[in-house]
Structure formats: structure tokens, C-alpha cells
Length: 157
Image (tube, rainbow, N blue to C red; front, side):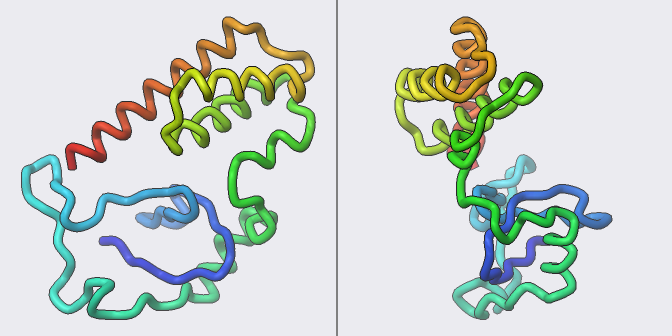
């Protein structure tokens, strides 16, 4: 079951928020009607409960408090992954940070070659020390493959 709620601040995506509760927020996606389930059946809105029939409810205070209390910066978190380029990216966080940036950029569907050049630039200007060019290519290739597969799955549904 998916519940769609209105929230007036930036929230991210979380799994295991509570037993059986995952959160999809800014930058997240869900499979929604009329997408096709792997069984071949289509997802459908409960009669009279589609967003066209019922306005979205506000997020309950207790849920918003739980979301933000476990991640104190959620209300002030920047709206995208570009925040990482404002501070040095140190050893131990370089691969993850650059992979997240590559994913963010690739989800906007520019040519992977453009993403590679942007990630190279961030690597050279923000990573301490910078990763090798071979490692940057490996990161972007890996994320580009994941994003291409995700796009194929979404388009199939």
C-alpha cells in the first residue's frame, strides 16, 4: 500500500523507517498506477481514492518528527547532491560522493560523457587527494549502467 502525503520541507528517501514503512521523498520514485506489476497485472488506485478524487493529506506531525529526529539536518538539507561540491571531499568519502554526484547528474539524462567531465572536474578541484582518472571512469561507467537499467525497468512498467 502506498500513502501519498504533503510535506512542506525537504525529506529524503529512507527504508526501514518503521516495520513495513519506507519513505520516498525528494529524488525518490515509486511504482504507481497504471504501472504493470511483474505478475502482468496493473497497479490501480482504490476506488474513490486516487489523487484526482481525494486531496493529499498533510504528513502527520509524529511521522515528520520521526523522519527529522533521526536525521537532524533533514529540514536544512540542500535540495540536490550539488551540496557536496562546496566542501572538500576527503579520502574515505571520495568514491561514494562522486558516485552520488554521477547518479544525480545521470538521472537528468545528459550524455554520460558530459557527466564524466563534470565528475572529473569535481574530483580535481574538491577531492583530497584526487582519485585516478581510471577510477573516475570506473565510477561513472558503473553508475551509468545502473541508471540505464533503472530507466529500462521504469519504461517497461
